[in-house]
Amino acid sequence: MSFITQIFTLAVFAVFVNNFVLSKFLGLCPYIGVSKKIDSALGMGMAVIFVMTMASTFTWLIQQYLLIPYNLEYLQTIAFILTIASLVQLVEMVIQKTAPSLYKALGVFLPLITTNCAVLGVSILNIQEDYNFLGAILNGLFSGMGFTLVLVLMAGLRERLDKAEVPEAMKGMPIAFVIAGCMALAFLGFSGLNF
Amino acid sequence: MIYAIIILGALGLIYGLGLAFASKKFHVEVDPKIEAIIEVLPSANCGACGYPGCAGYAEAIVMNDEELNKCAPGGAAVVGEIAKIMDKEATAADRKVAVIKCQSGGANNTFFRYEYQGVTTCKAAVIVNNGPNLCAYGCVFQNDCIAACKFDAISLDENGMRIVDKEKCTGCGACVKACPRNLIELASEKKRVHILCSSHDKGADSRKACGNKTACIGCGICVKKCPKDAIELQNNLAVLNYDLCIMCGICADACPTGAIIDPLKEARALRKAEAKKKADAAIAAKAAAEKGSAPEGE
Image: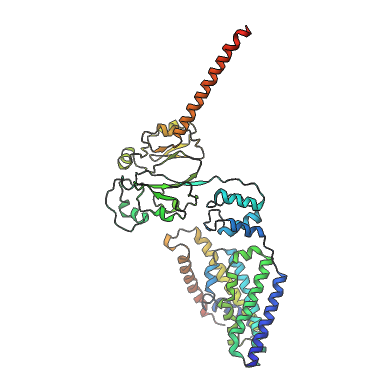
């Protein structure tokens, strides 16, 4: 397989087949919480893409050059969480400085990326799947994109739902959960893809 | 073991230093005025101002020059405080209060078709055979509005009728949403003339159904008498347009059933009498003066 095909396969699998939200069920908190408006969903998605890529890069380096040489693989979880937490803090500061409106829109969900299992998930999966350095970075990037894709799709749906006539008891969260289920079903269709 | 301690410690140290550096570099100044205004606001986070919570409104005041008088629960006192912080002129908002457009006479005076023993909410009561009371538009006395009011502004009088305390009412509109019969409307505090009936029944029916005998019978006299065309007849019910109403009280005088209330009637009559007395006195004085000065002139 040529290099380009490899990257393409990686992208399709990370975005569609092994989508973090809809097939691994990781990162559901922001998926429901920040998907009310397309703008903030897009912002959140960008933040997650950035954090996931950075986290993949750093955690892979830490795993390969710190933990494995000293036989400290059992410290994987705590070392990764430490890294991710610091990264998110950094991203939060940068966003607060450069894009205050985005900072406000993301609200409490930005710090929540810290404990977002999707970010830790991508870091650990990179190690488990034995990706090389580039593969790990790309997997982080594409997984973040997959997350952003479903988040924005969901936000678009929910924006329209606000204008739709939904029974009183189903308004808001209940109908959002139903839609999330429908989206997961739709994405299940990608699992048949084969290269 | 020792490596584990060293490596984790080193990681933590590096990240800590990095973040400390970043927090200096990306430091954001927060306007102290925002904090001060948040302190002053009632922190009910009711959303009446149209912003997400009191903090959002405080920020809008400082950042976007938002009006100072949007906080309904805070009232004039808070507006004054904010004005002090912002060094601006305070302009009192046109305060809105809830008006319950049904004077059924209270639970004790109302005619009931059956005894309702279900869930004690108005929403449930109106579903059962269109409500227990004879008037299909009237209050069903299960106190959804009282439960919805966060400020204890709605109370019961001795007859079981709901009374809005205009001082306590903040105009947040929670009761308007809570009432399943849409009896409550927000009107400016200054407006005193109200049509307190919501019955769209035909005249005879609504009169018969009303426990207080003050139903609007849709006769349309008020519509004809109103000098400003502020009243409109909609499906056997007179509806007042508060924007046009000048509170002359002519409709209240003309209403044959007393569905229109005008608490200013007596005050107005007094004022009129006083003005007339003054005018009479002035005329008398003028006449006297003319009498006194006339001979000299001639």
